[in-house]
Length: 274
Image 1: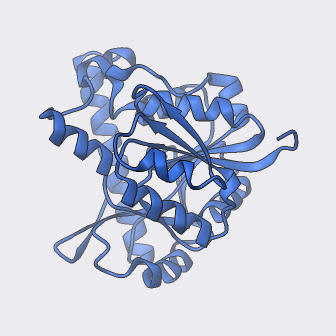
Image 2 (image 1 turned 180 degrees about the vertical axis):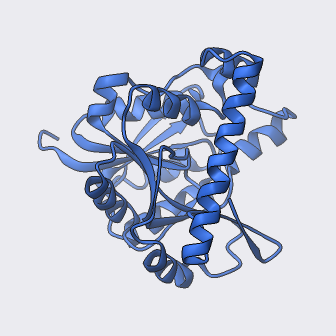
């Protein structure tokens, strides 16, 4: 493909075909061309390889070994050099109205180089398909500057040229998004999360499955992650406290203005702002 596309979507997967198929169908329903989706199969052992082979409209890569999330992100970003934006996306999502296009429209309006959509997480016992349009109207124009999340973040290709690809170190497991966020912030890159687009996220389905299968409580080394950021014990405490205070401030202001926040958790048929 010699002509630049506005975006390509990279979806790393490891088994969990039901969620992958559901997420892909949701994206296509909301305006994404199948050829703009690249599925990175990290050595799935279920029917994922067969489904991808039977769905030639999608681009896909099958890895013989699990490269991890960061490895798949970097691989996908490298393979999508023909796009202005690379959207790194979890497989266990549902798309709100034209979520990818409206997210990028907002990023370009706000001058952001990395951008995430609003996020509704948990069980879809509230009817996301009917809830999302009204939520999106209420939250349009709302921006959390200085934060994006790992469920979905779109990276302008100039960012990769400036700071490189996501880290492929497997010991970062579960922290690759924060590592990339910190690199962006330290480089002065404008990043944010916007209310003009929304996704439903079922909640780290693949990570939970790996933990259940292996018996591991965590997939990464938290202390190693902080050491990679150059943070000792006191630095870690300050980093976590600053993030928590900023999150609470954003949530409080958004709830007061809109009655919702840009990150909501669904539990026990009730919402909790994050």
